[in-house]
Length: 245
Image (tube, rainbow, N blue to C red):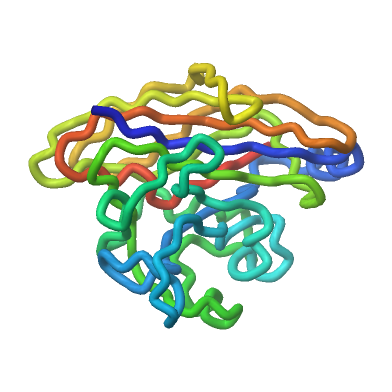
């Protein structure tokens, strides 16, 4: 049995390429801390109690206010609804589980004035309904898709890296995760930065995707995927972000 963790990279304009290539170091284009869910096992994000099948990013260094909250949403989305190569995962297959992992909390921090994952006060101020300390658990083999950037966002993805904190839960032992990417969300190529091995220890992983594209207009998209044998519950998507230098 295998799980697949994907990231959908996206398009940019020529002017954005120039602007975002200038800063030294990496920026988080889109990040998720999964705090939007109501709680352990509750896959809804507002009082309507509607089970959601996708989740907007709630962190981005391209967000002009605190790099977190409402304005980060346009820079990324997590899909587990059967689109973009994802599995239409039921609420008992892919669900939030209590407790944050800590290994990748600082992924969005690039200097003074930027904030880490689990910055709940900022998220509440910007209108997020729930703010919980959560990670995600995949209980069956499935595929989820993380999209970063997109037309009109000005997000430059040059040599992006997929970062995430991951572990296997009690009784799961270790599992190998392979990473792939695609320019169209359908055909995948193995990333040279993988595979990685998850263990019971909360560990940060950084997987280069070797995707280098700067286009003028239109849409250039790509995906990264990680495949992991399932043994018990696996938290492999905690604090996932896409960064581009």
